[in-house]
Length: 428
Image (spheres, rainbow, N blue to C red):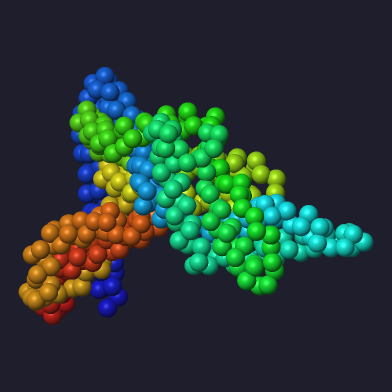
């Protein structure tokens, strides 16, 4: 028995040495082929330049498509902003703005002072503060309720028309004053006043004209128009340019596997820089606010506006990283060859020994192994493209699931181990 165990151990060690020797042979052959396919220097330079341009264009196309779909499309614009009043920070900021605007419009303190006897005039200011707090609380309830949803959505649609008019240079359609594009909150304030008066507090009957929320100032319009015109002109065209540049870089590169890895890792790095730049911009804008309410509201608005762009950026980053890793793993480096050899040994170790001819499901998987694996990859890609809103976590989870399915198919459909027969054991 001891001699059999020793022989079995020697056979296992021999199998490992053979697998490592085969991996080294493949590595040397691949390195030799790569050295022969390096090509002339000018061709490699052109390929790298095209790849760098492709990476820059991919990031620019991402921003252009986001601007075109999120900002310029009215329905998407409304869908992006319509839930903002329900956010705590935004609701608080809107409540304070509405309360201050209503108090100023109806001149609450002056109204109370005129109503009270002169000896009691000193309590006009505290009473005005209490009424302001009541209006703010009521405004907070209204802003978070369904009652204001219709008014807010209508204001957003009017605002989008104004923004589109300004960005297209059609100033005569501008719904604003003094060269500004704004969100008008007067409709919401009217609802708030009606609710306050319903509690029994009789407020003066005056026209409410609250300072609107400014989106663009006149000095910002020229830059905004330039960006909008570029986006409208290029739009989806940048995506096509990026694809053409990627194809040109791969065509010009003597070593297409290396170029694929360069494009994958380079795009991932560029997208990571893009995310970092968005975070730096967010911090710079928030640092400009001194009061907490405005800062928190602005942070919520920023996160709402850019959430889709950031999620899509992370999704593309993970895709680019996976492409780079796959290209590297197929390369001739010692580490890549070692990973491939380890994967092969691991999958072989998972296969169950069998002396019978495969039938049923196993036979089906063996016959259709490659189409099944290809189908799993295609389904994963389609899920990422047309499934829920893409994110880095979703892409990574999808890749893990697809890889697991491919490995399971490989284990079932690969060459089965031959279980030792009784005669073999006797001979041993």
